[in-house]
Image (cartoon, rainbow, N blue to C red; front, side, top):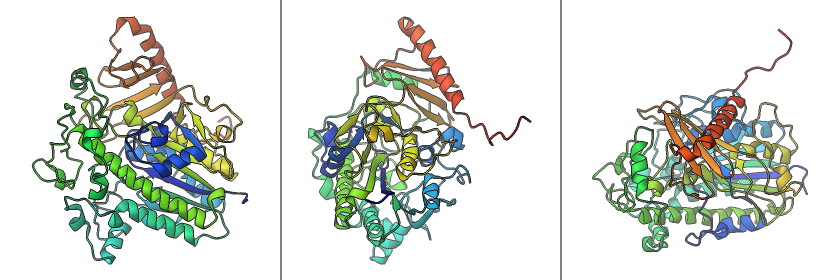
Length: 486
């Protein structure tokens, strides 16, 4: 057994926590991810630190909260030179580091995002599968070499064929990297774009899931009234009845604008929640199949017992819950709670379910601990290693988790909001709007009854407001370390 393990870190985009068969969803089909659950530790209460891509990724790649990294939203011109990414720290310790797929630490609008000193010596980059810049998009170049164009493929009502799909390309590039390794430990981050909208899986996969058999969203009629109250708070969609969810919005590609045909062959604005759910599960099925290919490569190369596998997502998807789809400034469970599985049969415990409160930034110091690398003092994550090796109860990790949204989208409201969640309570502050949300998660786990204005819960709101404020103050970046009294 090697002293330093290899690391395979797979991060999907916009995948909810409740999308894995072995963790209770009978409507999905995820045998390969289920295998990771059986062979490792599944953290059932893992939370992102922002419900938006760039700040979330900035957080878990540095082990710090987005506001402490000063990366609070999508669309930024560049990523700061410090703090260093965990991949840079791994590279400095002798790891060969590779990235496949998106990174999204800075804007990828009409360009490949600029890189920092990220530690990657193998870099196969792709952001959204629709992007077709003149240079810097390895997936588009791969398609062009095979005689295909992104424009041609994304215009098809049948979706991109699985052999040419970006998810498959990610697996191909990951397998190529793994097969090249010998000797030195390696770390590979695989950042798959799906199951991100526009919900356009290959037709063969879409046909595997009958919308009529889907369980449907967590929705009650009173949700519409609550979302009207929140209408002045940034979000990518307006609340609709589950039978009529509108997918047209300014952040999706032109092919999805109102009145045109989308890649799944349905008019924008006419997709019900169960149809979206079926397409979403189909995308996850393709991800699972490609995970199977990567896992088979590890076994073929005799690397399975020496490779730490992390499977997670950067944030979730509302998928019709509360009448919403996509993401934005809300903190419902489907949007901020994500899969997190850590597996290595040769080194870590197997078949463990941890319901401890966990944050994605905890992954960063965990990787450093596993690699025997000193964790920098400025990291705010808390290592999961004691749970993974059985030294600590899987029911205990954090007393609370928090999530931030600081004007994270290019939308007019410019909302600033924070979430503070304990085991049984969640409070959300929409800071410049003068209201928020308070949920008793024991009696209302899917957050349909906002208790913010309920006099009977006033003291609970005051307690949680102070706790949330103190938690926000505690993570402020204090700048350079002190070297003397003045």
